[in-house]
Image (cartoon, rainbow, N blue to C red; front, side):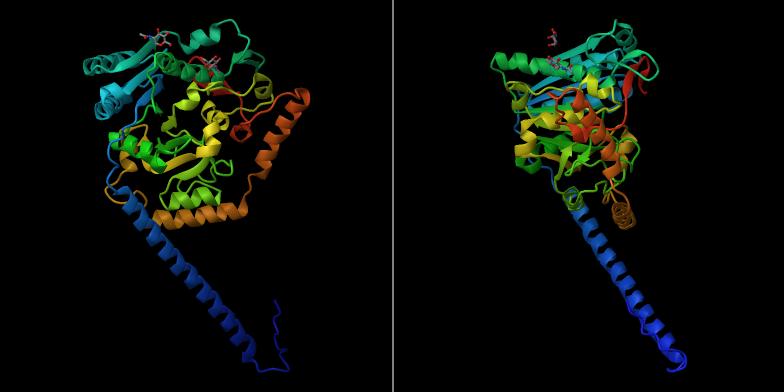
Length: 413
Ligand SMILES: *[C@@H]1O[C@H](CO)[C@@H](O)[C@H](O)[C@H]1NC(C)=O
Ligand SMILES: *[C@@H]1O[C@H](CO)[C@@H](O)[C@H](O)[C@H]1NC(C)=O
Protein backbone atom coordinates (compact mmCIF):
# COMPACT_ATOMS: atom_id res chain seq x y z
CA UNK A 1 0.00 0.00 0.00
CA UNK A 2 1.26 3.50 -0.79
CA UNK A 3 1.05 5.94 2.03
CA UNK A 4 1.47 9.38 0.50
CA UNK A 5 2.43 11.02 3.75
CA UNK A 6 3.20 14.63 3.16
CA UNK A 7 6.61 15.69 4.38
CA UNK A 8 6.32 17.79 7.51
CA UNK A 9 7.66 20.84 5.66
CA UNK A 10 5.43 20.81 2.62
CA UNK A 11 2.08 20.02 4.17
CA UNK A 12 -0.08 21.16 7.03
CA UNK A 13 0.66 19.50 10.32
CA UNK A 14 -2.76 17.99 10.77
CA UNK A 15 -2.74 16.10 7.43
CA UNK A 16 -1.05 12.86 8.64
CA UNK A 17 -3.28 12.74 11.64
CA UNK A 18 -6.36 13.08 9.51
CA UNK A 19 -5.19 10.26 7.23
CA UNK A 20 -4.52 8.12 10.27
CA UNK A 21 -8.02 8.93 11.45
CA UNK A 22 -9.40 7.89 8.09
CA UNK A 23 -7.66 4.53 8.22
CA UNK A 24 -8.89 4.06 11.72
CA UNK A 25 -12.42 4.72 10.62
CA UNK A 26 -12.09 2.18 7.81
CA UNK A 27 -10.68 -0.30 10.31
CA UNK A 28 -13.55 0.33 12.69
CA UNK A 29 -16.04 -0.04 9.89
CA UNK A 30 -14.54 -3.35 8.78
CA UNK A 31 -14.53 -4.53 12.39
CA UNK A 32 -18.12 -3.49 12.85
CA UNK A 33 -19.03 -5.25 9.60
CA UNK A 34 -17.39 -8.44 10.85
CA UNK A 35 -19.22 -8.22 14.16
CA UNK A 36 -22.58 -7.67 12.46
CA UNK A 37 -21.87 -10.45 9.98
CA UNK A 38 -20.90 -12.82 12.82
CA UNK A 39 -24.03 -11.90 14.78
CA UNK A 40 -26.29 -12.53 11.80
CA UNK A 41 -24.55 -15.79 10.97
CA UNK A 42 -24.73 -16.98 14.58
CA UNK A 43 -28.42 -16.09 14.89
CA UNK A 44 -29.25 -17.91 11.69
CA UNK A 45 -27.26 -21.02 12.67
CA UNK A 46 -28.79 -21.03 16.15
CA UNK A 47 -32.27 -20.72 14.67
CA UNK A 48 -31.58 -23.54 12.22
CA UNK A 49 -30.27 -25.85 14.94
CA UNK A 50 -33.34 -25.29 17.12
CA UNK A 51 -35.63 -25.76 14.14
CA UNK A 52 -34.11 -29.07 13.04
CA UNK A 53 -33.81 -30.44 16.58
CA UNK A 54 -37.49 -29.73 17.21
CA UNK A 55 -38.69 -31.39 14.05
CA UNK A 56 -41.06 -34.25 14.83
CA UNK A 57 -39.27 -37.58 14.38
CA UNK A 58 -40.01 -39.44 11.13
CA UNK A 59 -42.73 -42.03 11.19
CA UNK A 60 -41.43 -45.27 12.61
CA UNK A 61 -39.07 -47.08 10.26
CA UNK A 62 -40.37 -50.07 8.39
CA UNK A 63 -36.87 -51.48 7.96
CA UNK A 64 -35.94 -54.96 8.99
CA UNK A 65 -32.97 -54.40 11.26
CA UNK A 66 -30.11 -56.65 12.35
CA UNK A 67 -28.70 -55.19 15.58
CA UNK A 68 -25.03 -55.96 16.31
CA UNK A 69 -23.14 -55.05 19.44
CA UNK A 70 -20.01 -56.04 21.37
CA UNK A 71 -19.56 -55.39 25.07
CA UNK A 72 -16.80 -55.28 27.62
CA UNK A 73 -17.37 -53.99 31.17
CA UNK A 74 -20.56 -52.11 30.32
CA UNK A 75 -22.78 -53.29 33.18
CA UNK A 76 -23.61 -49.81 34.38
CA UNK A 77 -24.94 -48.41 31.12
CA UNK A 78 -26.59 -51.73 30.22
CA UNK A 79 -28.62 -51.63 33.41
CA UNK A 80 -29.30 -47.89 33.45
CA UNK A 81 -30.21 -47.35 29.79
CA UNK A 82 -29.04 -49.69 27.07
CA UNK A 83 -31.18 -52.75 27.76
CA UNK A 84 -34.33 -50.64 28.09
CA UNK A 85 -33.55 -48.77 24.89
CA UNK A 86 -33.01 -52.01 22.96
CA UNK A 87 -36.29 -53.43 24.26
CA UNK A 88 -38.12 -50.20 23.29
CA UNK A 89 -36.53 -50.32 19.87
CA UNK A 90 -37.47 -53.94 19.30
CA UNK A 91 -41.06 -53.26 20.35
CA UNK A 92 -41.25 -50.35 17.94
CA UNK A 93 -39.72 -52.12 14.98
CA UNK A 94 -41.76 -55.21 15.70
CA UNK A 95 -40.15 -58.35 17.17
CA UNK A 96 -40.46 -60.13 13.82
CA UNK A 97 -38.41 -57.47 12.03
CA UNK A 98 -35.37 -57.62 14.28
CA UNK A 99 -32.44 -59.83 15.16
CA UNK A 100 -30.29 -58.96 18.17
CA UNK A 101 -26.67 -60.14 18.02
CA UNK A 102 -24.57 -59.44 21.11
CA UNK A 103 -21.11 -60.63 22.04
CA UNK A 104 -19.71 -59.97 25.48
CA UNK A 105 -16.32 -61.28 26.47
CA UNK A 106 -14.24 -61.31 29.60
CA UNK A 107 -15.89 -58.47 31.52
CA UNK A 108 -14.99 -58.32 35.19
CA UNK A 109 -18.10 -56.39 36.15
CA UNK A 110 -21.53 -58.05 35.88
CA UNK A 111 -22.11 -57.26 32.20
CA UNK A 112 -23.03 -60.92 31.84
CA UNK A 113 -25.80 -60.63 34.43
CA UNK A 114 -27.14 -57.49 32.76
CA UNK A 115 -27.12 -59.09 29.31
CA UNK A 116 -28.72 -62.20 30.71
CA UNK A 117 -31.61 -60.00 31.83
CA UNK A 118 -31.87 -58.56 28.34
CA UNK A 119 -31.91 -62.08 26.94
CA UNK A 120 -34.85 -62.95 29.20
CA UNK A 121 -36.78 -59.83 28.20
CA UNK A 122 -36.20 -60.42 24.50
CA UNK A 123 -37.26 -64.03 24.93
CA UNK A 124 -40.59 -62.87 26.37
CA UNK A 125 -41.08 -60.66 23.33
CA UNK A 126 -40.25 -63.56 21.02
CA UNK A 127 -37.25 -61.81 19.45
CA UNK A 128 -34.73 -63.84 17.52
CA UNK A 129 -31.29 -63.30 18.96
CA UNK A 130 -27.82 -64.58 19.73
CA UNK A 131 -26.54 -63.24 23.01
CA UNK A 132 -23.18 -64.85 23.64
CA UNK A 133 -21.40 -64.36 26.95
CA UNK A 134 -17.81 -65.49 26.59
CA UNK A 135 -15.38 -66.19 29.42
CA UNK A 136 -12.33 -65.47 27.31
CA UNK A 137 -10.57 -62.51 28.91
CA UNK A 138 -7.95 -60.15 27.51
CA UNK A 139 -5.47 -62.03 29.68
CA UNK A 140 -6.45 -65.27 27.95
CA UNK A 141 -6.07 -63.64 24.55
CA UNK A 142 -2.61 -62.25 25.23
CA UNK A 143 -1.34 -65.40 26.97
CA UNK A 144 -2.26 -67.59 24.02
CA UNK A 145 0.70 -68.70 21.90
CA UNK A 146 1.31 -65.93 19.34
CA UNK A 147 -0.71 -66.66 16.25
CA UNK A 148 0.09 -66.14 12.65
CA UNK A 149 -1.84 -62.93 12.18
CA UNK A 150 -2.51 -60.00 14.44
CA UNK A 151 0.70 -60.33 16.48
CA UNK A 152 3.63 -57.98 16.09
CA UNK A 153 7.05 -57.31 17.55
CA UNK A 154 6.68 -54.17 19.60
CA UNK A 155 9.33 -51.60 20.54
CA UNK A 156 9.32 -53.03 24.07
CA UNK A 157 10.85 -56.21 22.68
CA UNK A 158 7.87 -58.55 22.86
CA UNK A 159 5.54 -60.23 20.43
CA UNK A 160 2.14 -58.77 21.29
CA UNK A 161 -1.47 -59.05 20.15
CA UNK A 162 -2.62 -56.01 18.20
CA UNK A 163 -5.81 -54.42 19.46
CA UNK A 164 -7.48 -53.79 16.12
CA UNK A 165 -7.39 -57.32 14.66
CA UNK A 166 -8.83 -58.49 17.97
CA UNK A 167 -11.70 -55.99 17.82
CA UNK A 168 -12.32 -56.78 14.14
CA UNK A 169 -12.62 -60.45 15.04
CA UNK A 170 -15.23 -59.73 17.74
CA UNK A 171 -17.24 -57.45 15.45
CA UNK A 172 -17.09 -59.98 12.63
CA UNK A 173 -18.32 -62.63 14.98
CA UNK A 174 -21.53 -60.70 15.67
CA UNK A 175 -22.23 -60.68 11.90
CA UNK A 176 -22.17 -64.47 11.58
CA UNK A 177 -25.92 -64.94 12.32
CA UNK A 178 -26.69 -62.47 9.50
CA UNK A 179 -24.93 -64.81 7.10
CA UNK A 180 -26.51 -67.94 8.56
CA UNK A 181 -30.01 -66.45 8.42
CA UNK A 182 -29.54 -65.28 4.82
CA UNK A 183 -28.85 -68.90 3.88
CA UNK A 184 -32.22 -69.78 5.41
CA UNK A 185 -33.86 -67.00 3.42
CA UNK A 186 -34.24 -64.61 6.35
CA UNK A 187 -32.96 -61.20 5.32
CA UNK A 188 -32.60 -57.70 6.74
CA UNK A 189 -32.46 -54.23 5.21
CA UNK A 190 -30.07 -52.60 7.61
CA UNK A 191 -27.42 -53.54 10.12
CA UNK A 192 -27.48 -51.28 13.17
CA UNK A 193 -24.25 -51.26 15.19
CA UNK A 194 -24.77 -50.04 18.73
CA UNK A 195 -22.01 -48.96 21.10
CA UNK A 196 -22.52 -48.83 24.84
CA UNK A 197 -24.47 -45.58 24.56
CA UNK A 198 -27.62 -43.89 25.83
CA UNK A 199 -30.06 -43.60 22.93
CA UNK A 200 -33.79 -43.47 22.23
CA UNK A 201 -36.08 -45.05 19.65
CA UNK A 202 -36.47 -41.63 18.01
CA UNK A 203 -32.69 -41.36 17.70
CA UNK A 204 -32.65 -44.63 15.78
CA UNK A 205 -35.64 -43.60 13.64
CA UNK A 206 -33.93 -40.35 12.63
CA UNK A 207 -30.67 -42.18 11.99
CA UNK A 208 -32.24 -44.85 9.76
CA UNK A 209 -34.22 -42.22 7.90
CA UNK A 210 -31.15 -40.08 7.10
CA UNK A 211 -31.03 -39.00 3.46
CA UNK A 212 -34.36 -40.84 2.94
CA UNK A 213 -32.68 -44.08 3.88
CA UNK A 214 -30.08 -43.92 1.10
CA UNK A 215 -26.48 -44.24 2.37
CA UNK A 216 -23.49 -46.53 2.48
CA UNK A 217 -23.37 -45.80 6.21
CA UNK A 218 -24.74 -43.22 8.62
CA UNK A 219 -23.52 -42.47 12.12
CA UNK A 220 -24.65 -40.53 15.13
CA UNK A 221 -22.37 -38.16 16.98
CA UNK A 222 -21.03 -39.49 20.29
CA UNK A 223 -20.19 -37.74 23.54
CA UNK A 224 -18.44 -38.96 26.65
CA UNK A 225 -17.27 -35.60 27.99
CA UNK A 226 -19.31 -32.99 26.13
CA UNK A 227 -18.72 -30.62 24.46
CA UNK A 228 -15.91 -32.86 23.16
CA UNK A 229 -17.05 -35.57 20.77
CA UNK A 230 -15.64 -39.00 21.50
CA UNK A 231 -14.52 -41.27 18.66
CA UNK A 232 -11.67 -39.37 17.06
CA UNK A 233 -10.04 -42.57 15.77
CA UNK A 234 -12.77 -43.27 13.19
CA UNK A 235 -14.04 -39.83 12.12
CA UNK A 236 -12.63 -38.38 8.87
CA UNK A 237 -14.15 -35.42 7.03
CA UNK A 238 -15.14 -35.39 3.35
CA UNK A 239 -11.49 -34.81 2.42
CA UNK A 240 -10.28 -37.65 4.65
CA UNK A 241 -8.87 -35.27 7.27
CA UNK A 242 -9.08 -35.74 11.02
CA UNK A 243 -11.04 -33.18 13.03
CA UNK A 244 -9.53 -29.72 13.34
CA UNK A 245 -11.11 -29.25 16.77
CA UNK A 246 -12.84 -31.74 19.08
CA UNK A 247 -15.79 -29.40 19.62
CA UNK A 248 -18.39 -28.19 17.12
CA UNK A 249 -17.90 -27.51 14.17
CA UNK A 250 -15.12 -30.17 14.22
CA UNK A 251 -14.20 -30.23 10.54
CA UNK A 252 -11.55 -28.82 8.26
CA UNK A 253 -13.31 -29.59 4.97
CA UNK A 254 -15.85 -27.05 3.70
CA UNK A 255 -18.39 -29.64 2.55
CA UNK A 256 -18.48 -31.34 5.95
CA UNK A 257 -18.54 -28.07 7.87
CA UNK A 258 -21.30 -26.47 5.81
CA UNK A 259 -23.60 -29.49 6.16
CA UNK A 260 -22.98 -29.67 9.91
CA UNK A 261 -23.71 -25.96 10.36
CA UNK A 262 -26.98 -26.42 8.43
CA UNK A 263 -27.82 -29.51 10.53
CA UNK A 264 -27.92 -31.63 7.38
CA UNK A 265 -26.39 -35.09 6.96
CA UNK A 266 -22.64 -34.43 6.91
CA UNK A 267 -20.71 -36.11 4.10
CA UNK A 268 -17.64 -37.78 5.59
CA UNK A 269 -15.18 -40.45 4.51
CA UNK A 270 -15.53 -42.32 7.76
CA UNK A 271 -17.35 -42.19 11.08
CA UNK A 272 -18.41 -44.54 13.87
CA UNK A 273 -19.42 -42.36 16.82
CA UNK A 274 -21.89 -44.34 18.89
CA UNK A 275 -24.49 -45.78 16.52
CA UNK A 276 -24.05 -46.73 12.88
CA UNK A 277 -26.56 -47.95 10.33
CA UNK A 278 -25.44 -49.64 7.13
CA UNK A 279 -27.32 -51.52 4.42
CA UNK A 280 -27.04 -55.27 5.04
CA UNK A 281 -26.32 -56.18 1.41
CA UNK A 282 -22.52 -55.58 1.36
CA UNK A 283 -22.10 -57.97 4.30
CA UNK A 284 -23.73 -60.71 2.23
CA UNK A 285 -22.14 -60.01 -1.13
CA UNK A 286 -19.17 -61.84 -2.46
CA UNK A 287 -16.56 -61.20 -1.25
CA UNK A 288 -18.43 -60.13 1.88
CA UNK A 289 -17.64 -56.87 3.61
CA UNK A 290 -15.97 -57.53 6.95
CA UNK A 291 -14.17 -55.68 9.69
CA UNK A 292 -10.43 -55.91 9.37
CA UNK A 293 -7.18 -54.37 10.48
CA UNK A 294 -4.31 -53.13 8.32
CA UNK A 295 -1.73 -55.85 7.56
CA UNK A 296 0.76 -56.62 10.35
CA UNK A 297 3.62 -55.77 7.98
CA UNK A 298 2.25 -52.21 7.68
CA UNK A 299 1.40 -51.90 11.37
CA UNK A 300 5.04 -52.75 12.06
CA UNK A 301 6.02 -49.32 10.72
CA UNK A 302 4.11 -47.83 13.67
CA UNK A 303 0.82 -47.13 11.94
CA UNK A 304 -2.67 -48.11 12.99
CA UNK A 305 -6.20 -47.60 11.69
CA UNK A 306 -9.57 -48.31 13.28
CA UNK A 307 -11.51 -51.33 11.99
CA UNK A 308 -14.47 -48.94 12.06
CA UNK A 309 -12.78 -46.62 9.56
CA UNK A 310 -11.36 -49.35 7.30
CA UNK A 311 -14.82 -50.80 6.84
CA UNK A 312 -15.90 -47.60 5.07
CA UNK A 313 -12.78 -47.69 2.92
CA UNK A 314 -13.72 -51.24 1.90
CA UNK A 315 -17.48 -50.78 1.51
CA UNK A 316 -18.33 -50.30 -2.19
CA UNK A 317 -21.47 -48.37 -1.16
CA UNK A 318 -19.33 -45.64 0.44
CA UNK A 319 -18.49 -44.42 -3.07
CA UNK A 320 -21.94 -44.75 -4.62
CA UNK A 321 -24.24 -43.88 -1.69
CA UNK A 322 -21.99 -41.88 0.64
CA UNK A 323 -21.05 -42.02 4.31
CA UNK A 324 -22.85 -39.52 6.52
CA UNK A 325 -22.83 -38.26 10.05
CA UNK A 326 -26.25 -37.07 11.18
CA UNK A 327 -25.80 -34.18 13.63
CA UNK A 328 -29.41 -34.49 14.72
CA UNK A 329 -28.59 -37.83 16.34
CA UNK A 330 -26.42 -37.29 19.40
CA UNK A 331 -25.75 -40.10 21.85
CA UNK A 332 -23.82 -40.26 25.13
CA UNK A 333 -21.74 -42.83 26.97
CA UNK A 334 -23.38 -41.64 30.20
CA UNK A 335 -26.85 -40.29 30.95
CA UNK A 336 -25.31 -36.92 31.89
CA UNK A 337 -23.49 -36.73 28.57
CA UNK A 338 -26.72 -37.49 26.70
CA UNK A 339 -28.58 -34.84 28.70
CA UNK A 340 -25.87 -32.25 28.03
CA UNK A 341 -26.32 -32.55 24.25
CA UNK A 342 -30.14 -32.53 24.55
CA UNK A 343 -30.94 -29.38 26.50
CA UNK A 344 -34.46 -27.92 26.35
CA UNK A 345 -33.21 -25.24 23.94
CA UNK A 346 -30.70 -25.46 21.08
CA UNK A 347 -27.75 -27.67 22.04
CA UNK A 348 -25.28 -24.90 21.21
CA UNK A 349 -25.58 -21.45 22.71
CA UNK A 350 -25.17 -18.26 20.67
CA UNK A 351 -21.88 -17.62 22.39
CA UNK A 352 -20.65 -21.19 21.72
CA UNK A 353 -21.43 -20.80 18.06
CA UNK A 354 -19.74 -17.42 17.68
CA UNK A 355 -16.54 -18.51 19.44
CA UNK A 356 -16.45 -21.86 17.68
CA UNK A 357 -16.85 -20.43 14.17
CA UNK A 358 -13.88 -18.14 14.73
CA UNK A 359 -11.78 -20.78 16.44
CA UNK A 360 -12.38 -23.08 13.49
CA UNK A 361 -11.45 -20.35 10.98
CA UNK A 362 -8.29 -19.41 12.78
CA UNK A 363 -7.25 -23.04 13.07
CA UNK A 364 -7.88 -23.56 9.37
CA UNK A 365 -5.89 -20.49 8.44
CA UNK A 366 -2.94 -21.34 10.67
CA UNK A 367 -2.60 -25.14 10.53
CA UNK A 368 -2.25 -27.82 7.90
CA UNK A 369 -2.69 -31.56 7.93
CA UNK A 370 0.11 -31.85 5.37
CA UNK A 371 3.00 -32.75 7.68
CA UNK A 372 1.09 -35.38 9.64
CA UNK A 373 -0.06 -36.93 6.37
CA UNK A 374 3.47 -36.93 4.96
CA UNK A 375 4.64 -39.13 7.83
CA UNK A 376 1.87 -41.66 7.13
CA UNK A 377 2.33 -41.52 3.35
CA UNK A 378 6.09 -41.98 3.69
CA UNK A 379 5.64 -45.13 5.75
CA UNK A 380 3.04 -46.57 3.37
CA UNK A 381 5.34 -45.87 0.40
CA UNK A 382 8.22 -47.63 2.15
CA UNK A 383 6.00 -50.62 2.94
CA UNK A 384 4.85 -50.80 -0.68
CA UNK A 385 8.47 -50.72 -1.77
CA UNK A 386 8.97 -53.97 0.11
CA UNK A 387 5.64 -55.53 -0.87
CA UNK A 388 4.80 -54.16 -4.32
CA UNK A 389 1.62 -56.26 -4.56
CA UNK A 390 0.08 -54.68 -1.49
CA UNK A 391 -2.20 -51.69 -1.35
CA UNK A 392 -3.98 -50.05 1.54
CA UNK A 393 -7.31 -48.56 0.51
CA UNK A 394 -7.84 -47.11 3.96
CA UNK A 395 -4.78 -44.83 3.97
CA UNK A 396 -6.93 -41.95 5.29
CA UNK A 397 -7.71 -44.02 8.39
CA UNK A 398 -4.08 -44.37 9.43
CA UNK A 399 -2.37 -42.57 12.25
CA UNK A 400 1.08 -42.71 13.81
CA UNK A 401 0.26 -45.18 16.59
CA UNK A 402 0.78 -48.78 17.63
CA UNK A 403 -1.93 -50.34 19.83
CA UNK A 404 -1.78 -53.65 21.65
CA UNK A 405 -4.13 -55.53 23.91
CA UNK A 406 -3.20 -55.71 27.61
CA UNK A 407 -4.86 -57.52 30.50
CA UNK A 408 -6.87 -54.52 31.70
CA UNK A 409 -7.60 -52.91 28.33
CA UNK A 410 -5.18 -51.78 25.69
CA UNK A 411 -2.02 -49.72 25.38
CA UNK A 412 -0.08 -47.47 23.04
CA UNK A 413 3.42 -48.76 22.40
C1 LIG B 1 -13.72 -61.46 9.79
O1 LIG B 1 -14.67 -62.47 9.64
C2 LIG B 1 -14.43 -63.41 8.65
C3 LIG B 1 -15.59 -64.34 8.63
O2 LIG B 1 -15.99 -64.70 9.91
C4 LIG B 1 -13.11 -64.12 8.89
O3 LIG B 1 -12.84 -65.02 7.87
C5 LIG B 1 -12.01 -63.08 8.97
O4 LIG B 1 -10.80 -63.68 9.30
C6 LIG B 1 -12.36 -62.06 10.00
N1 LIG B 1 -11.38 -61.03 10.03
C7 LIG B 1 -10.80 -60.64 11.16
C8 LIG B 1 -9.83 -59.54 11.04
O5 LIG B 1 -11.05 -61.15 12.22
C1 LIG C 1 -24.42 -67.65 18.22
O1 LIG C 1 -23.58 -67.40 17.12
C2 LIG C 1 -22.38 -68.12 17.12
C3 LIG C 1 -21.57 -67.63 15.94
O2 LIG C 1 -22.25 -67.78 14.77
C4 LIG C 1 -22.65 -69.60 17.07
O3 LIG C 1 -21.43 -70.32 17.12
C5 LIG C 1 -23.53 -69.99 18.23
O4 LIG C 1 -23.87 -71.33 18.15
C6 LIG C 1 -24.77 -69.13 18.26
N1 LIG C 1 -25.51 -69.39 19.47
C7 LIG C 1 -26.81 -69.63 19.47
C8 LIG C 1 -27.43 -69.88 20.78
O5 LIG C 1 -27.45 -69.65 18.45
